[in-house]
Image (cartoon, rainbow, N blue to C red; front, side):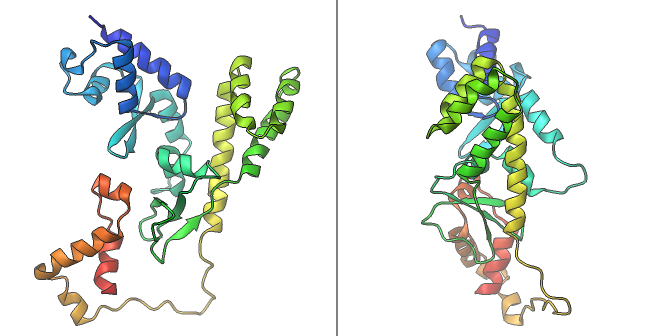
Length: 275
């Protein structure tokens, strides 16, 4: 019979190889079934794989929702990412880059068809398909460019000693340099150094581009007119109109939000005031 430690070692090895990229629970489940066909979480007194990991593998932490699934990451990596967030910040936008795998993947994929938007009302970074229409108030966040990613690789390489530098520099000239670059870093034993350097630089670029996506400040002396709700608008908040409001709100929600069954307050207010 498969032992708990066997499965734990398998999951930890897999997450270490993928680090810092998280793996979905479904990926770990397939991996376990492939290597240990008789593995069933119920055999160890667990309701499901999530319950099994929580009870038996403390070195693995939940990264967050991944569609209908759950993402997992090494706890050490997870804690380190949290510690990099400046103290005193409330719901920083940058936290979503390092804790939401979809935001990270979209931002670091220049050729991705998906787009990033920042909702000023709630500070949430949203991922939209090209066919989806963003809310008028959302601000698009440009993705990191291929040139910026290459510059990160060049800067990291320039700080290395010989013969590592000479081995890596020619690879940066290749069209898909990042594939062989990462493989070579692994063979040189400096993969973790690269991951930390690249992660920090990407986070800095995200900070810069988020700032660039913010609207310009209003000129001094120009008043900001508060939104006035008419008696008719207030009346629409009564119970008899709740179903209609809910339908309008759902139409505004992204696929990810529908899957997570979240209902942002900003959408509700928009629906009430724009009808």
